[in-house]
Length: 115
Image 1 (cartoon, helix red, strand yellow):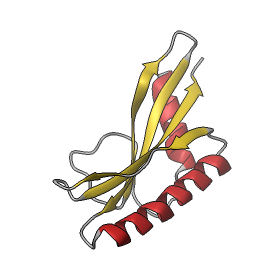
Image 2 (cartoon, one colour):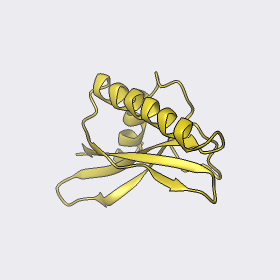
Image 3 (spheres, rainbow, N blue to C red):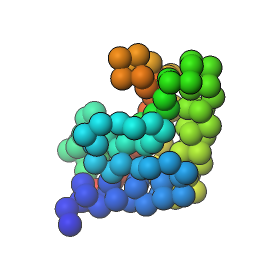
Image 4 (cartoon, one colour):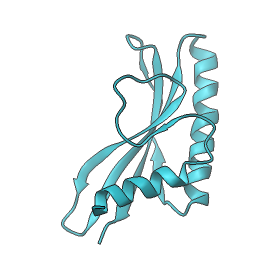
């Protein structure tokens, strides 16, 4: 197993208690609610660190208000799971609405040492 895979699996394991599906690889399509791990930027640094984005998704199908509340609940759950799993995370981005896909999302940044 390579160090990038180990880092991705460590974050995925920390998110095990989350009540929605957690995709450790980008899915073909997003079915909210869920959490998706994606490479961050910069992905790998010369200092031996890897960046990941932990993105929470909620559905806009029930309206903006309920989607916002669902996203807030999920983001809180994800932040708590990362903390409990010993995975330090950065700030949570403001919600982004993708009306074409019917999704509302917010992202935590995670940086882990891989060597």
